[in-house]
Length: 130
Image 1 (cartoon, rainbow, N blue to C red):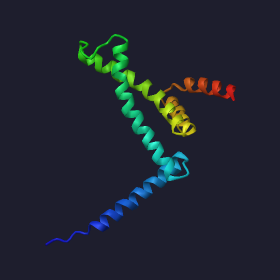
Image 2: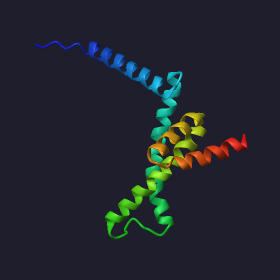
Image 3: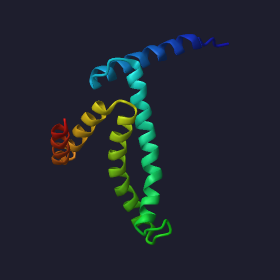
Image 4: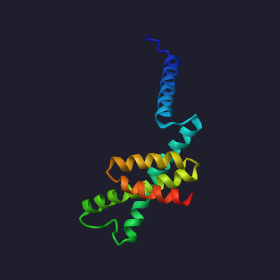
């Protein structure tokens, strides 16, 4: 009979998770675990919501889900999900009190996609208001 120590495995997984959380806190410049949990929640809500909002937006502009060819409908929906996600990410970050984190995250993402001019424009408008 093989004896397996599940307590040891559970302890190892907790240690591994703790190491991962430390790395994320350092990389993102976050100070505590509460912020990490809030950030994960915002990412989860944003991802789900952007998927759910894309379909009504397509219907709003006159493209029903029975649109033919169906592959084109899927491509249009994917193209629409991206901007919805970007806007929701910053908006929900603001609601959850993490606007500065998500705005910096968004600026990095836009710069990587060679759309940094959008972030610079919005940043200049935000600084004028302050």
